[in-house]
Length: 103
Image (cartoon, rainbow, N blue to C red; front, side):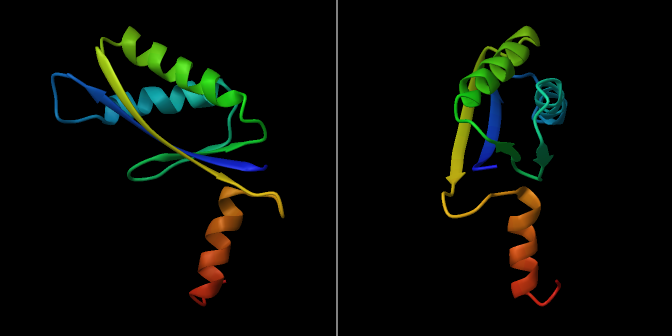
């Protein structure tokens, strides 16, 4: 993989301060798209080989949330890109753990 996408989706105007049910729906969308992804406490990290996938991901996520009654969605997105080596979620975690003496 050449890209790691960090995605944080914030539904606005829901009737509750709890957002976990919406996060669960986003996770289902990502799974249905066949994307390798990892949920963290504040965002989801997705492995991508092609940036062309980003618009499809965002459109699918927004469509699902709107179908669930969300009237407004804010999305934070960051992309980690490397040309010198392949990126993976596990590789990035392993690199930090090695530096912490855990690897």
